[in-house]
Amino acid sequence: MSEAKRKFWAFAIVAVLVLVSAGTYLYHEYYLYLSVYLWFGVVYGMCLQYGRFCFSSAFRDLFAVGVPRMAVGIMIAIALFGLVGAFVSATGLSTFHSAPTSLHAVIAGFIFGVGMCFAGGCASGSMYKTGEGNMNAAIVILSISITQAIFVDVGGWTNSLVPEAWKASAAAKGLPASITVSDGWVDQYLAGYIWDQPVLSFASMLGWTDHSVAGAFVGNFLLGVVLPGALLLVVVYLFWSRRAFMRKRLPAGTRAAGWRDELAGYGAMIVASKRTAIAGLALGIAAGLHMYAIQGLRVKYGVKNAGTLLERLGFDFGLSVNGTVFDPGYWYVTTQEAQWVGWVMHKLGWNQMDNIFFGFNNGIPNPLINPADWMSISLFGGAAIMALLHNEFKFKKPTLETAVWAIIGGALMGIGSRLGLGCNVGAFFVRVSQGDPSGWLFGLGMVGGAYIGVKFFNWWTERRMAREFAAS
Image (tube, rainbow, N blue to C red):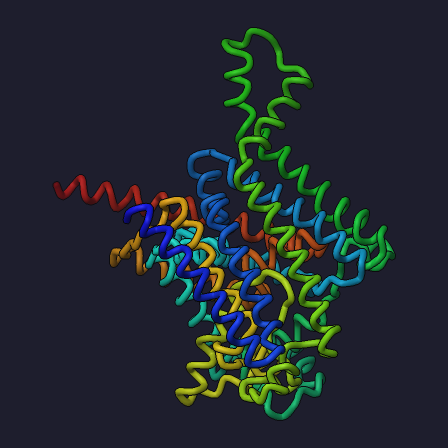
């Protein structure tokens, strides 16, 4: 594709999004709320594509070939996002809420980590790659979404796997009659186990509130992000980066390495991740501004959730029993994609409103008027714009083998996302940056799962190549 054509299509995408924003706002002022999600989605997509922001690639590079650049860049991005998040929290305008903390996050992260290595891309990485024209990544997104929609409504024989303590605790919650919690494994897992776990932040564990200056900057940012992140980077430096740096700095063992050499090596590792770190800084600033904008509009319109706005507009189908829809107020993926599939399944006759995930919490509004869906769709657009402008857009057809791995990996990521209440973005990146200890637990599991996934995939590839050579 020529440069002129690439620029034409990039600006065409922008023009379409502008028309959607302007046209819907002229129809009704409330659509401004959806347009905020739309334009921040564009920014997220551009940042992801620019920084090649993929957790699967980071762990594959680290465990398979010993290159820490992407992993280091992601940790720097988390710290930068955490700094912005601390400012937002200290002003009292943060839309973030910590998640329950327990061993479930480690297990969920492990399943997700294996899945993303099988699929060749995490949730966010698969989204920006789809925007680049990678159809294998699109299969991953579809698999994640379908698996979630099925998994959250599974019942029948799976109820025999539910511990009696979960059943009793779930039954005692007094959920509405429309939520058939007694016939849903995930419902009993959520209501009977997850909801009983402590909701913590590093600030609250120290006796501070998340919105206080001490809680936001000292508790959640310094103690919850910077210190553990710096320690992790020290581990990465010692095991994956130091040897190569010292080989260049001190050839043939000319002298023993001193503390200045170690600091120089640590700094060189950080600087090598500049592109991902820049993308992370932009993501952090954008996510912080996103929180400000959404919270400001909630105050302006006198609502706590977009479900109220949709109801005022006459779109009451698909709202949860609480009158809400998924409306995080910041960067998030996987939940809204599951809503697409849930909405379609419901229209085809599969009741998706009788479970906690859709019926009680997130709803399944029409994707055309779902705020978070506008963010995901425009994220594809933002990634496509950046890829077109940098001559990195290209339609890539999947092979049968890669499509199968995409389906398997996507399914595992879908299950891990629902068990962990989020993916590599919602359950790890955002939570860690906002001082939520459950994010580190999910990350711990994700690292372990990624290690197993990389090793298994390498074994599989070597085994297949050996068979091919033997047959030739």
